Length: 297
Image 1: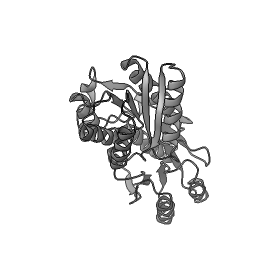
Image 2 (image 1 turned 120 degrees about the vertical axis):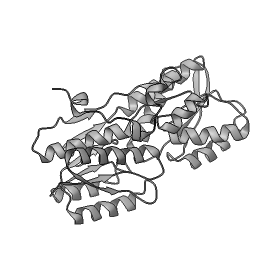
Image 3 (image 1 turned 90 degrees about the vertical axis):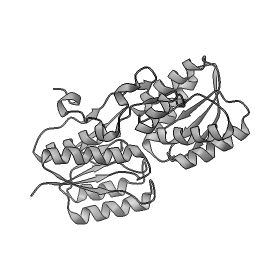
Image 4 (image 1 turned 60 degrees about the vertical axis):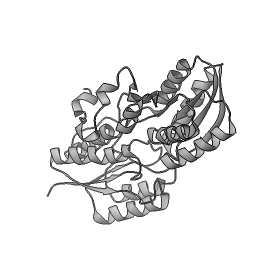
């Protein structure tokens, strides 16, 4: 029977995670495997993901591809996967605890510093900015916030007017941004830790009749459309579909007895009005990278 891969994603509200599920499905179909998806109904919910891990273990998958909803709260669940003898690939959000056959992701800290530096250069290297953080307990949020703050430290003319969690959710970001706009008559830039929050911030800006340069992360199709229309300055192609596809292939290759590298880090690019054309298509029309394209030697 075809091997069964349990694939975990964090929510159904972020298009990047829909893309991650699509990437896993594509690779599994190509390599003759089956996929079972485990997604919390409440976005990024720790208790739900714990229960989903238990449910997956009861089904006895051949391998798991796992992204945690929290940096530390899922350690016991990972230990359960380990104790059950289910080989697990950690992807997107790196975990410090647990045994994994490999990690697949991108450098959240570096991409955050790079997109922040890009924004600061575009606003002339001075002014007050706000940061929209993701879920406080998420690894990506912590690393991106660290990158944003270090970029500010390296830019003497930039100051952080406020930094608020918007939980990687569009509606939360819209509400938080509206509150910040009411609090600060002038803001010069907005750093958003993902594109979904950037879209929420754009809604708040438009409702308030204000225009402030802002950037995001993920290069989801909706963000590319916002770049085309001039509503979003730039994003970073932290590609959840590509990362998930590579992680799923890593799990299948492990089951076939292949040796894997300890980690696979996919490169990222800043996407703006000068180069968005390569990303200007729905996820269904985007290609997943080949194994040899990202794993050298």
